[in-house]
Amino acid sequence: MTIDTTHFRCQIEDGIATLRLDRPDRKNPLTFDSYAELRDWFRALPYRDDVKAVVFGSNGGNFCSGGDVHDIIGPLTKMTMKELLAFTRMTGDLVKAMIHCGVPVIAAADGVCVGAGAIVAMASDLRIATPDTKAAFLFTRVGLAGCDMGACAMLPRIIGQGRAAELLYTGRAMSADEGSAWGFWNKVVDADALEAEAQAMARRIADGPNFGHMMTKTMLNQEWSMSLDQAIEAEAQAQAICMQTEDFTRAYNAFVAKEKPVFQGD
Figure (cartoon, rainbow, N blue to C red):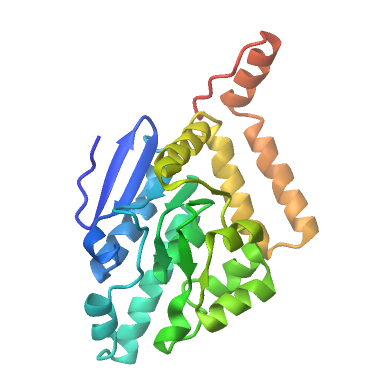
């Protein structure tokens, strides 16, 4: 089922939403409007029950080339401080919306994955690349700081402080092999297998205990700011809540019957 969106493509099939930026001739840059529409789409996700996993895919051999030079970078040079802060808060709100959407997000990145495109991949829960994928946090190369859209908080947690510092200071591209070895990419597959691999991963997640997945995503993000004692207590409460779900009972009954459980998300 194709969903009516203006600035990106969205299809929802059997619990999996597949998103793609839709300007392949420009390597899929983001614009003011696409930022805002993506932010609003992810913000609305916790309130719908037809999406169990999201694949943020590539289009035309590339993932995303970051903010459009003509539609975003040029206008930004003429804005007031108030207008600039409104923009940077909006872009950060896209990352917040992805983090708090309650649904696992898989980035399937081919080719160019730079600037805000690299941030979208970073903000996803799982990331798959191809051998030709080059991820770069380009912000210093256009005279800005590397601390954009949560990069200084999130990237070190994924690949380590020193590696993140190098990428954020220099803006250089991280190869697929580097990203795989450093833990940024969960998997690297051939380009012709990228879509199928991402969909298979999404299918496995969508078929799982969706309420449990929501709790897992919530804890993965909330526990960044907790002490170890607080985290253990928060997980105890979360797990106790999950033990009251019908999916937990279904899993037990299926185990007793030596069958595979069929989860329903309640």
